[in-house]
Length: 421
Image 1 (cartoon, rainbow, N blue to C red):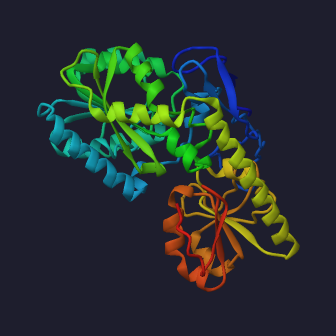
Image 2: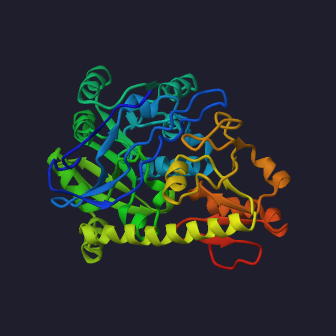
């Protein structure tokens, strides 16, 4: 059944209709919708074009997939990646140490997934509550001891939580602002739930890193926004919230963590906010020409990949992929990989022995890499490219090669010396 979707005609943050197409992409099937060989895959594709608001500078998708379709059978778990778990522990401890929320006070995580961010708060003695629309994951989180409401964040839900549980001393939303269409409801909900001296923290992939590092893999239907600081600061202010600090981190190859309070709260705006706003101004990050540069580089990379695929086909080479990642369909479609990939390596139990959405590429266990020994393996799990190469050195020593797609198409074999992003 074709998913419901609609096209916005105005900016998600400031509601301006003054939006312009900056990265034109080929339509892509929805990620995470893997099928068994006997199931029918309609191979429906949906627009993935990227727009910029010329009024506030926000970069976003305007074609919005129905939320139930996006989050049904969602397979990503934060706890599956040790680096994310460690990052969340550090974040939680840093918040506790620096802001010293009252012992036993309420901590809320919006888009809480499996509860990995809330767990260290609970272990430190705080009351915790997760909110996540992925029903299966929310149920598992609750069963593990992290109470999680299987809902989207709305103003009505915020009022209910405030009435039943009181104000929150800490609210977090990590890698969530990219996933939300109705940003205004989330911001208003945060304002209503936050205690007068409470603190809200968000983490989002950063547009400057996306552009500089050519992070095409972060563009898929779930990521409706690609945030930068200038439009975010103005958006928060319109909803009675004040950005008081910001930090750049390397999570997801480049993100920002923002610290926010109620407008007029007790904290001063830190120099880091002014410094990053000045850098964005210097880099002209709010200009359409800057982001259109991404599209120009992408087209050059695509031409290089298509030429390599044609050469390998003429030589009878075997080409596979590594990582049944959410970004997979984006890479496969934009680089013309669909007809070239014979199989895909991954160990996710909900994907092994199934077929990828759209192109129906068989997913086989990673242990098959040493058995099948393809000539070239394109890394679709771009965030883990360095680790994948390091963990499969024997494959390279036996004559195989990996292909890294960002920031540029790079063939990695046993003789390679260039660093991997």
